[in-house]
Image (tube, rainbow, N blue to C red):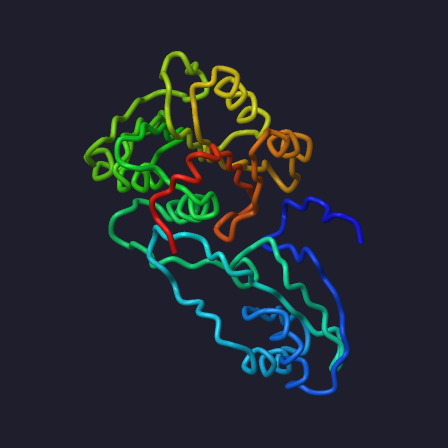
Length: 277
């Protein structure tokens, strides 16, 4: 079996799949438990039989969690049934959550949109998040969901958009609103930042060209940007260009729709995260 091929449009990739035959539910569960503790069923068929096997395995908590938290270090395997006595499984998967599903304790009062969950997930996947004193840019900020997240972590945020921010977000400590098209601003106009974030609705190529300006200027340390596809097609070439940037991840997050998320964080920032599981 060769190396796993890179897949963008998947929330969880089974990296080391294998099959085995079994005679009973207990035998199937025993085989999985011999490999590791955590398993999640992917019941695309024989859902009831999958559920019986799952109930015979150690419990995996899936309740919503309050942000921020460290991503789990223990591996999460996945299994499915091809028929009543044949299992397809992988102990090694790309996501540490069951079938890639991550749920947060939602805040229904503070953020002006539900986009904040997307940034929460990206930061957890990155393994690091802004700290008090960090300088952030939020491009395409309105109505302010991402700015709300960044400012809530104690960072200083320059929120850039041609439309006004939600008044409550604009009034948060550390938030500065700049009425402008972010893509017409040069890195030198804004100066060095710790975090460059973008949820701008634009063509992927336009986002990539803007990001390249920041990379070439070496004025941003960490990046989280949404690559929003236009129409039903996806821009494969630009997606691969983002993925080719050293230190990058291009993910289809649980909270992404017809879009991908590009994450590029400095290793030292990831290692120096002060929060742990």
